[in-house]
Amino acid sequence: MRAADRQDARSALSSVSHAIGAFCLAVALCAFFGTHACNAQRYINVDGSDSVLVRNIQVVQVPSEAPVLLVDYWAIDSLSDTAALRRRAVAIFFKMKSRLQTEHITNFVVRAAMRDARFQVQKEARFNLYGFVFQKRANGEWHFLADSSVIATDPPPSAAHRRSRERS
Image (cartoon, rainbow, N blue to C red; front, side):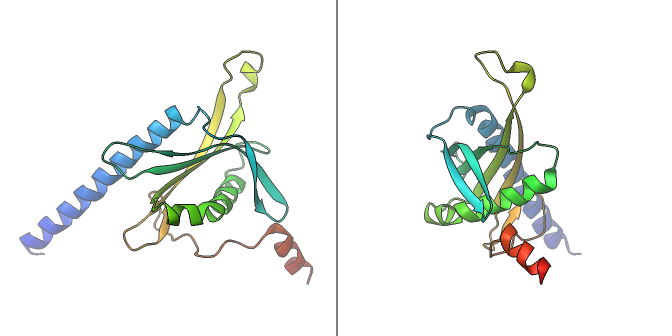
């Protein structure tokens, strides 16, 4: 490998490392500021038989970084079934995709929130969160942060559609 090629590879790796570091800062700011709801709570139907109660939808602006669209919703069951949380996050992503395109947002965070049972009585409720970070890459494809697999361009089939296919 030539010295120039090595230098190009180093600079590309450095810029990716800087972008991930800056995005992690944005996610940390989302974690801090995201607890203050900006919107009235509403339901989003994410599947034919599944809807979520949204706590908060807001655009978080980080100085000299791309904006982040943050969606917090109340977890339905628990935060331990990460596969179900991931499927729900992808479904929410597809519901919000037109807004992401319209507002030219390339970073998207979905967080499931569950009230911590140990703090039910206190005025200041505490929450456990489990989240996913989506990022639009330079080639226009959406990925989970630090994941090389592309998120499909079409939404996954609804649960009702999957059940009808399984019966046939």
